[in-house]
Amino acid sequence: MQFALVAQDFKDDGALERRLACREAHLERVRVLAAQGGFISGGGVLDASGKMVGSNAHFSFADRAAFDAWLETEPYILQRVWEKIEISEVRLFNPAA
View (tube, rainbow, N blue to C red):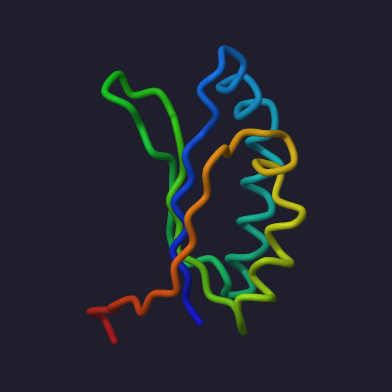
């Protein structure tokens, strides 16, 4: 199953600093997941000034429970970077297929 995640960061004064402090741990998990075929695409959401204020990503997991289990140890959740998270099941189009 494929999933789209859209997350908005907290808006307090320390939000960006928390994001940057755990960003490498977040990216390393994504790199490992990508090597396993579970991360499809994604990146930061930027405000008008180019500051990261959220994330969007596409994932592939066997089911929602497996995705939720992976998210339980996501640094951006544990370190209070993402305030609001929306997850939808999607079917992505691959023009190369």
